[in-house]
Image (tube, rainbow, N blue to C red):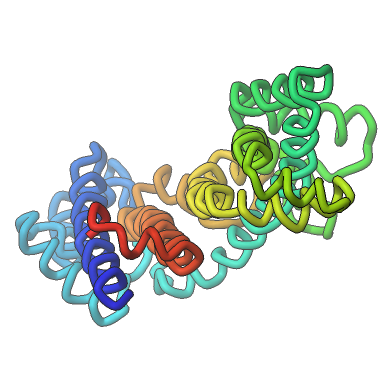
Length: 310
């Protein structure tokens, strides 16, 4: 187990270093001059050059990368070019909203997918199965930028039940969470169905039924417990994906999270904030994947003892 843990941590560190470098290079290669955005087109060349030197943008790309890495190791993400506020404070202010949206969306997905996938598996090749798979197909096919406005038109403008946007009340999270959660529920429902169909054909399921256990006890105590490993893997991977998908959803619903901050910063050419937001989302995705691998290995000893995984 220690060897497996060390190998996973080492690979995670390598990926993290690659993500940091790639994000830095991509942000600095994007067209646009933050100095021109801050001072305007009518600024004097001397003023532009002075500000560029003050921000360190006159240095070579390698020097800027080394300066960024050295400060990053100290936990210093720099300051916003637009507001001069420390980026760490900006992230701490916006992070709870994104985390709340991701967790509620995950809960919505689980509440929809588990019963839907279970019914589809237990009623294979029936109307229930076809309906569940149709929902899954629609959920995967409809993008967030279309699903969000549809929900707004139905529940906010037509029925008047829920707020259109913002984060002013507890009900404000319902539509963004549904937008993100339904797409994940579609993927998860298919996984639950496929895994349960495989498990329901095992000998121990037939033995449990032969002992006189009710169908509900067979499903909850035996089938779902043994089908949990691939489902946990999908949940771990999709939780990281939720953070990426939240960028579009937060813009649609004006949800004050990291995604909304990211788009605002791109429009302002606020490179340090853009860099920090993309880096945080990327690192969260990598860390969640690593934790999912470790959890999978802890639940299933065959994973950590498999020679192909070292």
